[in-house]
Each structure stands twice: as structure tokens, then as C-alpha cells.
Length: 173
Image (cartoon, rainbow, N blue to C red):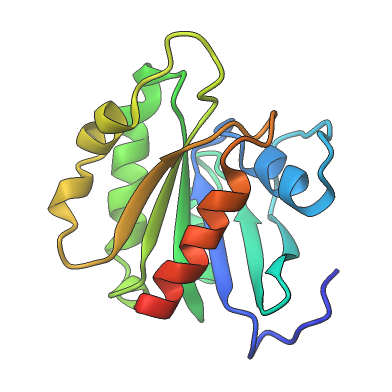
């Protein structure tokens, strides 16, 4: 998919609960198209060229409850974690908070920057990024660089900016 080797292309792991929009987001970033997606079993991977000097290898890992224990197999060489939350589904935010806390507790993610994407912001009654930030307890992660951004994977809103921010977080860390 890409032309850069993994040594020059930082690895970014994209996780979150099932139906948060991870595969839609990756597809939109890589192809500019909306694709019909089904629950990811295993992973999708692609190289995202942000500009002529910046590329990221993005691993989209399945988010169903049965798949989450496998997230740990993707953490070696991870330079940034992107956690996607469905901001239109407030009922599942506590479950997302537990999943995020668990994955961040892995020793290999110590000091790895975090980008939280509040997806589906185009839907009515979606939570604000402040509400999501508080419910995910992001302010407690004072030992790591983190950002939260609103986006819409379906419409492509905020995606390019979010991954440019991910690249900047990686450079800072």
C-alpha cells in the first residue's frame, strides 16, 4: 500500500470499541471514499501519506469485545495510539473508558502519545469533546501527551488535521 519502510514510517495503532468508525475512518483517509464496512476481524493496515515528508503506517484493529485482548499484539513499535469514540453513543462511553484505560496500562505504551477522535460529530445530540474528555478521564493522563479532536469519518471532517496532529505528537514525544 505504501512506499516507505516501517523504519521511517512511524506505526500508529487505531483502536476503539466496535462500531466507533475506525475502518470507515481509515478507508476515508486512504482512498477518500466511503466504503461499506463490516466488523473487523483481525486488522486493516495502510500507509497514510500526510505530506511529502510525513507518512504513518496505521493499523486499524478490530474492536469487538472478543478482539480487544488481541490489541496487545499490535503494541510493539507503536509510536502513537489513536482511540476512536462514537460521540453519538453516550451509553458506551464508560465501556470505552475501561478499554482505553486497559490498553494504556500496557508497559509498551509508556510515554506513547494518545489521540482521541470523537467520531460521528455530524450526528445530532453527539457529546462534546469536553464531555468525552471528562468521561474518558483524559485529564488524569498527565504523564503522556494527549489530544482530543472531533471528526466525522463518513464526511471526512477533521481526519487530515487529526493525523497531522498525531505526527506532531510523535515528533514531540
